[in-house]
Every structure is written in C-alpha cells, then in structure tokens.
Image (tube, one colour):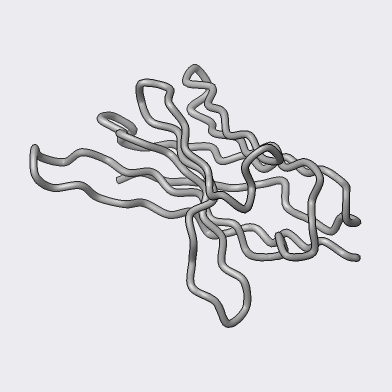
Length: 120
C-alpha cells in the first residue's frame, strides 16, 4: 500500500501562486508516475500534470506555462508549483501515484485532496 498526504492548498487571489506538496509513504517501489489531478464542482476529475519515473513531464493545456510539477525522490515528495492562478483553477486537487504491480497490471493510489480556491 502507498499512502499519499497532500498539503499546501488554500485561498489566493487571481494572479497569485501556491505550491502543493504530496508526501508518499509505505510500499513506494515501482512507482511509474506521480501526478496531480483536480476536480471542480459538477465536473469530472481531470489530469493537471504528471511526472514519470524517468523524469519526463506532461501538462494539461490549460496549465502549460503556469504550473510546474517536480519530484524530490529523496523525500518521496512531489510538488506542484502553481503561478498566475485563475479563478477557473479553483478545485480540489488530488495527488496520484501509479504503481506497476505486474507487467500488465497497475494500481492507482490517491491522496485525500486539498482545496485550492482562486478569487477574482
């Protein structure tokens, strides 16, 4: 099992910045990717950013150039630096870790979520 604990959410004005952190513990081996997802009220959960074990990253088009995902493997922590925040970034942000269990089976782990609210 992998446990994920997020922190760093809060209320910020449009144009401001926040940094989210997600600390992983437990059986944190064979983690293929770590990422951040978000879910706004009435909407489906969507991918924000992902970082793969080799270090490559991918971002949703809506956050490219504003958000940066990074990972500190020594601390088993993944970060999401969010700059130039917009009201439409308001959502609950979830940390995700995808673990390779077998060659054909992967398991997703989720954090409890942290609220990000951007006021206009």
